[in-house]
Image 1 (tube, rainbow, N blue to C red):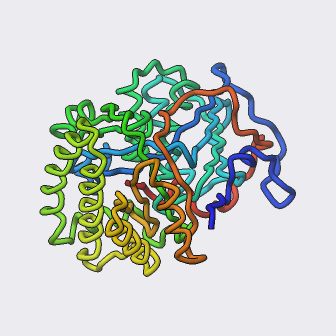
Image 2 (tube, rainbow, N blue to C red):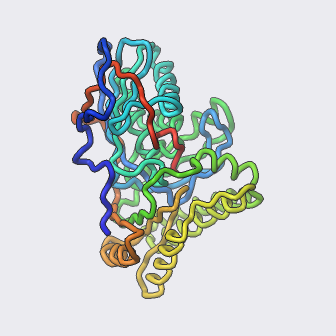
Image 3 (spheres, helix red, strand yellow):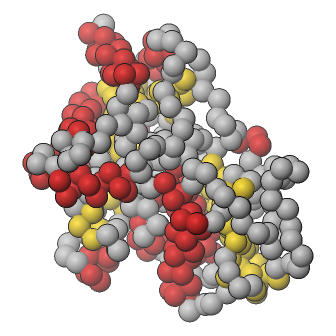
Length: 384
């Protein structure tokens, strides 16, 4: 069946209904900087980021390479306010707990860089599933970094903005840019590591590939990517060999992109993703994101290749599978996966743009709300 988002773009910014949070007494004054609105898109790593060497600075063990998509955008408005605390609304619901804390911590970083102390109102909405292995945190923190930097009047070049986004979610560093993007692991620790770990585009847009996204579970993951990553790095005997092979995969992938060799890109992406999942399965205790439905899609991809169709799978930290193919083959790949049964919904993506400021924001009636419980949110963890 065709994928239908639970938060379609057409409804982003709809005013809360009577069952959602309402304004409490008093209002929040807008600070001197007004507001900024940004839009960012998720990216899917073809060579995965899995494992940090520095938890505080979000410095990865290895570099990674991704493709930014043109679907499932996040739109975020950041307004500088005079008030006692940050206010965050996510998909029409006020955030509290871990979700609010994670965003407030990121905003503290922005405020420190800007030399500012005012709080912020953040209104954000995803046009795709959150915390389901579809890179919602990548688009989420890329959008937040872009809007917050503008709202607090930080003058950042693209590299510095990528480094800032990395501090919210590692993979967000890549969603600052469109197309094929490499995230450098960087060298050293501390300031040296922070300065040298950033993302940048590498070209290759002439390839014009398609990525058929096969969703088998739109719900949030039982184990967040962040927890799974930490456990895998600490306990899996397969992690270090995979990380070493991933360095080689990245070098070969950059060469394949430069040569515009889509079959080679697909082959490297598939082996790298399956290797990452092998490290999770061998963690202690093991972590299994792949479901029987995930495996059914992987079998279908193998069958497509046996028919002569160039199709390769990649899977992030979740059960949902993405299939890389040519734009010409995408309708056939989509129909094949869609025909597997009602357990799968599909959506075809192509190369998308980088994060940008826009004048069309997410509207909200929040004005000094009392936060309520937020379900699956940016606190769920990172996508790869």
